[in-house]
Length: 71
Image (cartoon, rainbow, N blue to C red):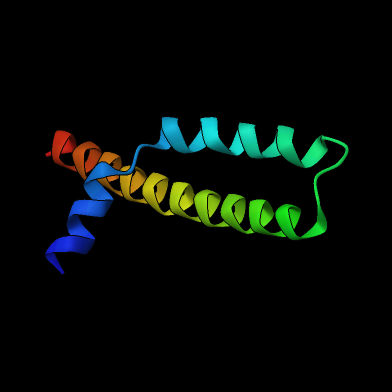
């Protein structure tokens, strides 16, 4: 559990988005093998899912802050 928490803290949406952009460029290159393309695609999907979950958590925090401001 502690390892999992540490990984979440190290995750950066900004870094993930940069990597997704890199992956997109690599997938668009001629000569990328099917095997490499599949691995890149899988990495991109996993990163986008992590970004989505992280953004949902941030959205929840913002809602909580907004509700406490109303009190």
